[in-house]
Length: 350
Image 1 (cartoon, rainbow, N blue to C red):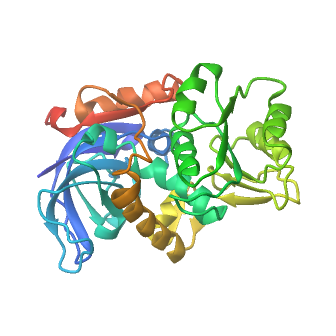
Image 2 (image 1 turned 90 degrees about the vertical axis):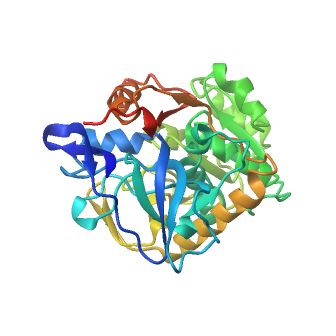
C-alpha cells in the first residue's frame, strides 16, 4: 500500500492508504522519501482546482523501486532520483501528485543528484529549476550553460525559488545578472552570482537597472508576474529586440507592442494535452524534449560542478500530516527565500 495526502470534499486533506500505482514501459516506479511545497500546490486546493480524490504536490526526491522495460537512462533499483509530476489532476487520469509514498514518472523526466547532496535539498530543484531554464534558454534563447554569453539579464523576484535558480543559471551561461529583491536578500543573491541587486520597493529601481545595464537590457524573467512587476520590468527593457518571460499563465498582461512576452507553464514538459487553471493547453513536444535535455545537463554537469546549488530547505515536521500547516504558512506569506520540505517517513498512518 502507498500513503497519500488525498484531497476530499470541502478542501479537506486526508492521509489515506492507496494501492501502489502501476508503471508503464518507459516509466520508473519511485518510492518517495521527501517532497517540497510550491505555490501551485495550495492554490490547487484553495481554489477548488483539485477535484476530490486527487493528489496535489509536484516536487519529489526518492529511490527507484522498479524500471520499465523501455525506460531510458540505465536506472537501477535503489538509485536516488528527483523530479516533478503534475499534481492536482482529476483522479480519472490516473496521475498522482508527489504528496504520496509511491509515484510513477517517465524515466526521461527525472534526474540523479550528487551523493553529497541531501534528499531534502534535492527536492527543492525540479519544478523551480526547470521553470527558470524554460524561461532563460528555451523561451528567451540564451545559450545553455556552461557558456560565455555576455548578455545582461534581469531576474525580477530574485529571492523566489524560481528567481534563485534563474540567477545561477544565467550566471553559468556567462550573463551579467541583475536582480530585484528586498534589501535583506541582496548579499545572499550576490552569493548565488548576481552582479547587481536592487530593492524592488525603491522608487528609483527602474533608473538604477537602466544605469547598471547601460540602457541595453533586452532580456528579463519576471518571477512574480503580477501587473505592477510586469509594468516595471518592461520599463527597464530599453535594449534591442526586448523579451520578457512571465511565470503566471493565462493572464492578459499589458505588454508594450515592441516587447515580446513568453509565458512559461512548467506543466508543458510532460508532453500531453491538459486543462490547467480552467484553460486548455495543447501538448508541446519541444518543451518536453528541452526538459529531458536540461535534466541530463543538470545531473551530468551543473550539479556535479557546483554551478547550481539547491534552495535553502526548511523541513517541517509530520511528513504528509504537516503539509496543511505548510500551506497556511505560504498563504500567509510566512515563507521567504526558502523551500518547505517534508519527510514521508514522518507521516502518521491512518
